[in-house]
Image (cartoon, rainbow, N blue to C red; front, top):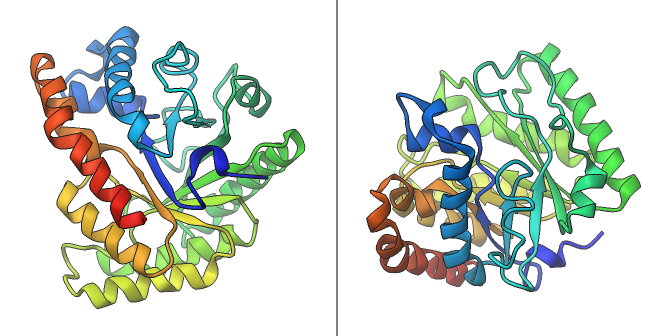
Length: 283
């Protein structure tokens, strides 16, 4: 199955805007429930309208942006991924295995026009019980994607990491486990902590370990850190075989947190040049 709908010549420069619970937390940290569905859709409309034309694809979700932004806000020719997972997982990642959002399905994602489905699954290979449940759930959803005929972007994400020195080992083992399932693309966190490990040669070496284990393309998520750090991570990852980026808050975070009257200016003056810079790194 082809990923051409969200890539350019096999390179990915994807705008990640499929945030839901996390978007509420960014907009109103002390009272997330005060943020309405209309507020979230309006904000996503502004971001997608200003940025999507400069991306190879956009990551959307079925609550606030599918079909809301398919009214011409998303430019013709820019494909989108459709998030599958239900929300509520961040509060307790081990409460249960990943599930598809109620009332949504892989078939519905295809019917909406999605170029790919996307699944986020919190995962720790060193937590055997929950890890096994997640692996089984992911395998079942991946099987459904194959049956329906849509590629799956899989995002296995670590959580609760008390020992940053374990990050590289956990990310690499996670890659090994899920690459064996043969998803169409892996969306991954940076394999080392860039604050604790400043040596760029170590960054490249760790990213090369991922590339050695991936027979499918992989992209780098942004994880909400600073743009400058993320840009440097993308540069290191791409030099070691990474196929591009799927960037969210590190790209547009300041615009979202700014007063609404300032957002358009910040997007034009700060975020658009950032996206262009990342696309230039990816090539």
